Length: 136
Ligand SMILES: [Ca+2]
Ligand SMILES: [Ca+2]
Image (cartoon, rainbow, N blue to C red; front, top):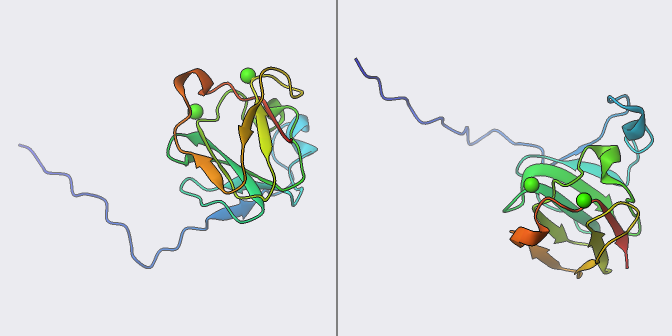
């Protein structure tokens, strides 16, 4: 006998927090130095990007969660936030240019992310290789 599985119903009243400040005390030492800093947001699964932040997402179409880095801050090594070679889309809601790099410590060919722009699907050759970002 077959049963049709009901589609999950999204409760209209349920409000999913778009942003969650990273609580201190998470896992590794490497993360501990960054986690808890108000300039680094953990983005929810279906997060939007707040003004003044550069947002990096794990999946295409700004999905999969990720991180928001407050304008003016750099991240030289994504391994420290368990995000190395994961980025598949981004939004630059900051007011300055940001660059991302395929290697840590701002190495490799820079890709520019202009203010008020986004890339919902990284090019195949750019997918899942980003390892650092900086104001540029
Ligand atoms: Ca990815
Ligand atoms: Ca890389």
